Length: 273
Image (tube, rainbow, N blue to C red; front, side, top):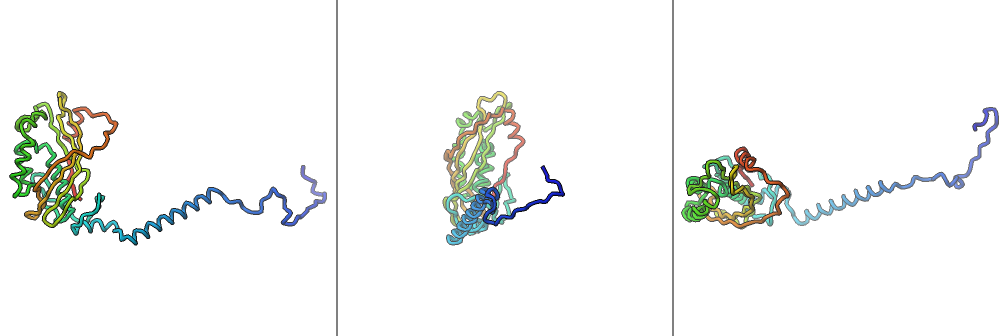
């Protein structure tokens, strides 16, 4: 209840040391602000240590990877694809990129594009196989490569895929064979020879309503030996191994009609390292 204005008021001043205990004399620290300050300091220390370690070890910057490829040096382990500053391959022959740079990176680009051609549907037809070999093969090794690939597409193999002796599918079905490089790795490199591994995902089979050989996915690695000849990288030897194979995803398979439509509507890519 307030006092009337005409009555005297009494005020008592206490010394600072005798203030009531319920009134704090200083701001209490905030735990959240303190925690954030500690985290910021620790983060800055970690960044500073990492920069110092890189400087001492001579680790290259992002431009160093492109320089290593340009000089033909083979990077240790798996190196991420990075822009090199080189112009992409624009020339083609029979739909396959040609005219690759005379570098380790150029050899990897050639191997990736040649893997796409080697894993395509045209390889199962004699005429298509001949065009591909004329484009990618080292002339000195073309005869041996042709013998190996003809054997891989022998009539018994074609029949197992549902194709006739000329590699053609039944009228109501679509033969599918696609290869997509996942990554490349140089095993050896010199100015006139390169050996490149190309890890690939592929799919092969028959798409259509009455198919008994549905399109299935596979994982494999091409090992392609390239020879620098005629101003380009050409295949002198090749082999294929299964894997590495990841676990399959928990996905429902598409219908044959969906696969047929996708194969007809989605084009492939030209690869550059």
